[in-house]
Amino acid sequence: MKQSVLDLQSNVNKELGDSVVSSNIALDELTIEVAPSNAFNALKHLRDGLGFEQLIDLCGVDYLDYGQANWETMTAVNSGFSRGVFDFAEDDSSEADSMERRFAVVYHLLSVSNNQRIRVKVYPETTQMPTVDSVMDIWSVANWFEREAFDLFGILFKGHPDLRRILTDYGFVGHPLRKDFPLVGNVEMRYDADKGRVIYEPVSIENRVNVPRVIRKQSPSNV
View 1 (cartoon, rainbow, N blue to C red):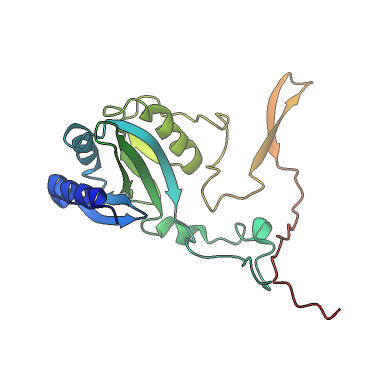
View 2 (spheres, one colour):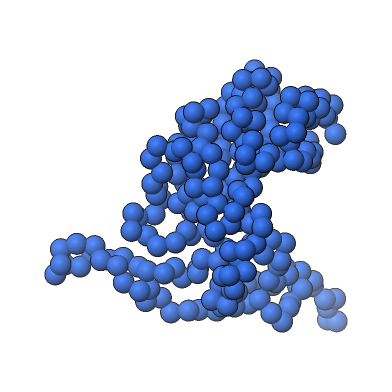
């Protein structure tokens, strides 16, 4: 473990104090968790006090069914081959909505002057309407990052001046990267020549069971 990363961890814990919920080092990278109520001030202090002047990336994470594998890669299994068709349809949405710490917003910060990096995680307080403070006043580049996380995960950013969809159509229903979103989607769009405009219809894609490639160990040949 690099001493520079240990020193960074010590400095961050000292500067942010009780704002840090957890602090971990893995693969010589520091990741801290900050409470949503303290996130804005903590991130601002990371920029002004510790020199993290650049926001490299901001993304959302959905931890629904985190760590649960539907199939293995080295051996054949008896379940999971129809995951893309059936799993989401059978999902208990009420249980998903009540799951604590389901969503997270992850900030990747870079200090050019100190040649240091840090990852900051913030878990919204509620799952039904996950909301965190916008950091556009700290890093203006967060504008499109936050719109993307809103569009794909449904995470709201309080104080964002123009929180609109950025990758999907304005009339799109749902958030595609949520793990309870059906892989075949909800609606599809096409241009209707008679009406002279784009219309939305229920999806016409037929469900298919895609069997993944299973990697098996080669058995000794008797030939």
